[in-house]
Each structure stands twice: as structure tokens, then as C-alpha cells.
Image (tube, rainbow, N blue to C red; front, side):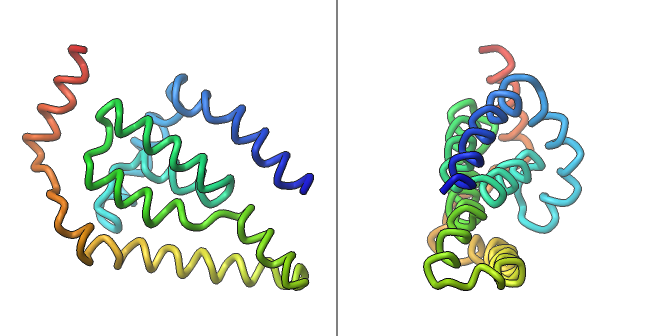
Length: 151
């Protein structure tokens, strides 16, 4: 329980830094070359992924919702991030493995969960209903960014 509490406190303090002070934009720019080809998502979604996996799924959902409302994510991107990346969290995995009294196997368990999460994040968006959501063209993305810049 103390581990869970400390993760929530740390995530709560780090979230404003990510969202309001430019860390999300900085890391998003660096990670675009990884996230676009593999997951067809913007680079800033890597921060959502890490926040969900290393913190808690609810932190990732809060970040995704904020990014969607401010038009940084399309409807499809927000749905993919919310359904694939926010399902795996270290805190939930810790609770599960503690309940079955296998704490000594936490590292291999969590690495297996992460590998399965990455494979699922690659495959699941290609399946319906996520595949039915339209992926915007580069022109649409440009218009969305320009509209946001003038608001």
C-alpha cells in the first residue's frame, strides 16, 4: 500500500510538469520517430504510455483526455491510447502479484505483461472497432493544429 500511495503522489506532482511546462512537447518531438512507424501515434503518446505503465492507468487516461480536449489527439488516437496503453500499470501488476503471493516473481511477470502490452498495442488498433475510426490526413492534422494555434 505505501508503494501505491507514493506512486500516486509522485504522478500527481509530475503530471502538471508534463502538461503545462513543455516536457510533453519536448519528449513528444524526440519520440515521434518511434511511435509513428510502430503504433501510428504521435510522439507525445509515448509519454502517455510511460505514465500509464510506470504510474497508473488513470494517470494515462487523464493525460489522454486532456490532450484530446485540446486537440492534440484525434478521436482515433485517443481511443487507441486509452484502450491499449492504459490497460497495463505497474501498480495494478503489483497488487495482482501480491494477492497470489508471488512477489519474488514480479520482475519476470511485469516484463511479460509489458511485452504482451506492446504486442497488443500493435495489433489491437488494426482490429474493429478501432480500425473503423478514420485516421486524419496530414492536411486535416495541419488544419487542426492551425485552428488550435489561433484559439
